[in-house]
Structures are given as structure tokens and as C-alpha cells.
Image (cartoon, rainbow, N blue to C red):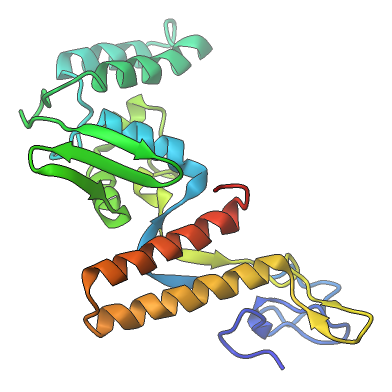
Length: 245
């Protein structure tokens, strides 16, 4: 029997002939399946966008989140972009590349004057800043906060459509749960029901997420909490890409 709120909840769709979906009321023949979600106890980086995250961290100021390129230069790029005659397919690709190349060389933000730190990226998902006081790891919650402060004008120059693709969305606060039609159960020759690999992985995510939530509420030492955050990051990463080591 499917548990309400569980991974086989009847509201996610139905696989059994004659059984009606609790969301759309259709049988398995017509039910398209429906997504659910898991609210995460801590944000995690989406592995599919890790290169985008890396580039934006290098290109933007750690303090004001502006692109680390003088405004005069940004205005020149904007003029090219808004000029239909000069804005070609080639320049559409080159403008972001040139901006990123200039930005990563900046030792100081031209907008707020703050000094910038060297960024170290350790695959698959760890970002560290080398500060005067030593190495400081950038957690997903910090990265999300920085990205949320990037202004639309700067993102537009990097070819982001801010109406549909804000960079802070690369950091997940909720995990999508796909319909049961995407991860159907199978019945083995022994008569035992076996769940899909995606379902097993979602179980891992739910278990770690619950442990993390309980640890935070209990006031568990930060090092233990961080270990659980890293474990949650690992399971969400390998859920999307199981070849990531």
C-alpha cells in the first residue's frame, strides 16, 4: 500500500491497471504522472550546472556580486549587444567569454573596491577561497546568497535570461521527485516487488535529509552537521549523474 507523502504516493501517478491517480483521476493508460518534491534541510549544488557556478564565482565580486569589470568596459559590451548590425552569432558567444576573461584577472572589484580572493575548485562540488586568514570553504547557502545579488544587467551581458534562468536556481533548496511512471516498480520471478534505481536513490536522499534536519534541531556540533551536508550533496549529485566520483 502506497504511503501518503512517500515516494510511491498515489498523487504521483499510477501504474496499476484500473487504479485511478489521486491527482488527475485518470487510470494508468491516460495519467501522465505528476511531480512531487522534497524540501532540503540545506541547499545543495546542482551538478549539471557546476561549470556555470564556477565561472560566476570567478567573474563576480565576493562582496557586491557585480561582474569584476569596469563599468565603462561593460557599457562597451552592452553597446555591441544592443546594436543589431554588430551583434552576430559570433559576438553572442564572444562577449561573455571576453567578460569572464577580464573579470577573473581582477584583484580588486572596480565597483566596490573590495580585494578579491583566489578561488580553488575541487571536483566535483567544493569551492574554497584563499583569504588572509586561511582557506574558507564556500557553502551552497553562501553561493546562493551571492548569486541572488547579481543584477539583471550583468547577467544579461553573460547571456542569461533572468526571467527564466536566475543563477541562484543552480543551488537547489528542494529536490524534484519524478512521477512513478518514470521509475516503475517491477515484479521479480519470485513475486517480490523491486523498486527502480531512482527510487532507491531518492530513499537515500530522504534518509540523509531527515538525519540532517534532526541534527540541526538538536544542536549537533557543526562538524557533524557539515558531514551530513556533504553526504546530502553526494547523494543528490549521484542521483543526477551516477558517474561522478
